[in-house]
Structure formats: C-alpha cells, structure tokens
Length: 98
Image (cartoon, rainbow, N blue to C red; front, side):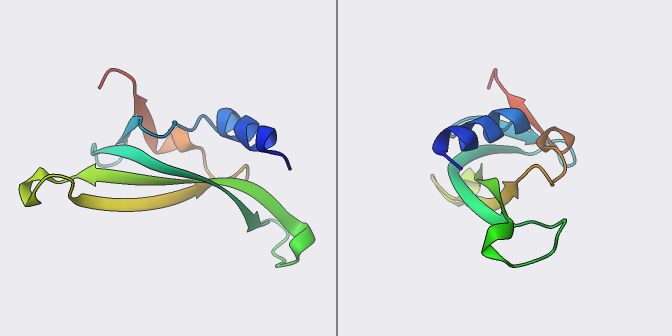
C-alpha cells in the first residue's frame, strides 16, 4: 500500500489532521490531535497474525490540556482506525471554529 492509499484511507474515514481539535461525543471533552501514524494491523475479520493478512490503519494520538498543573501538561491517549473499526464520527466531532 502506498502513502497515497493511507491518505485516501484517512479521508474516507473522515479523520482529523494533526493540530485540529475534536470533541468527545460521550464526555464533551476537547482534545487536540498531536500525532498521526500510518500502521499495519492484523485483520480482525480473519483473525490470523500472518504478515500477508494485514490491513492499513491510521493511529491518532490526542492531548487534553490541563492548565491547572502548569502549561503544556495534560492527558494523552491514542486510537487506531481502520476500515474494520467503528466510525470516527460515532465518537468524535471535529471542531472547525475553535
């Protein structure tokens, strides 16, 4: 799979870009996307660890600022998204007017 296909995957999944802010639909908290990685994962449908049975995914790392502990502090978490996973839009919304 080429870099272009990873870009296509990110666009098809509706994922935000690094630097954009998103809101958790469940908790209402605002997070900033601080990292994006292109990764290969085992296909959960076939269940095999075989190298030929890998699918592309995009890993996003989020940061929630906690200024009460000083500047630049806060919690981070990461998720990976593939065609097999629930939609990004089911759990997050991109904030364009932050």
